[in-house]
Image 1 (tube, rainbow, N blue to C red):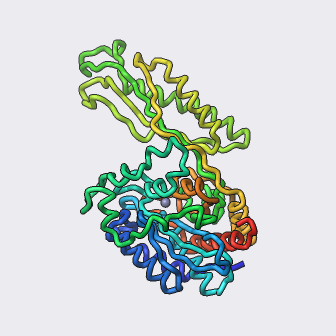
Image 2: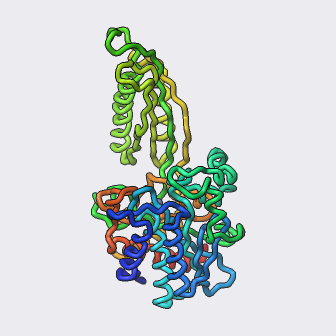
Length: 431
Ligand SMILES: [Zn+2]
């Protein structure tokens, strides 16, 4: 059992928090921005210092590799992203990169023998907060292996044409990519020819580990999800002159629907939990009203519905309830539903999960099995090579905001779990 260094991890967290420091505890570090380039320079500096070989691919993903003792063995990679959302925190993404660097540094410092080459990797543009969509570059790199329904979202030319959502000196992602010095040949992309396993360490971004008093989680899978638009159609009239009983108020219809949906879904969740299953989570995060004038009765209302659960059959049931509910009338308005997108649940590799769980058990740390409700590059990577994730305890369950925090100790526990899981993978005859 080897351990990562709390001191080295603390130093890396402090250093990387400077790149894009927004001045109030968090960072704004868009992909391929000058701030992200500073983080990449630091990655190169630290990885070259331990003798790792640096490579880049054509979409600016970066790789630092320590050769192993077997010249024919494929690489084991640890990867995450170094970009953030606007006014994000100091952990989302970069914690996984820091972990990957720390694992390589520990291997060198402790002279740990290993058969496979070990690679620390930075994915480009995971957040998609300047150039959407999220997970853009893993979508490009893993494109050939993605399910057909996902492919249209990540077509190379479409991605290159992605326009910035905020101030940028470039007209689109393609131009930003052309300008970066961290670009290499396409052959350097992550592929099953050269890589045999991938580990991503990430903060949980939710309160479950903290609520259960656990430090780290062995992630079993990424939840499946679907996203719908639910639309209501009535008619508009003057707010002061039109009697209540004659109204076809689309916003009232939407509100009525949301309340009834919560009742139906809450009942379904109670049943699931009683059966010992996970509850599904559902969110209406976006609402649109027309004409959106305070003296007019709304004639159109539309809201988003995001539903997530690890089992496809549960998602299918939720979808069926939604379809059934849409057949009814609400406040004298018609209702229609439209699918926007969906993602299948993505199970991680059971052998890699086993290495992670064994490592956590042997360390004697407080751990549990957990699911990922958020999307990560690892979920696309899982279609290409055996993949898994390790979660670290997140203070108050907060992420994508400046108070986002993981203690140095919890980062070190997660890194130590990653190191030992990687070494188990390295020693396994199956890899
Ligand atoms: Zn992330």
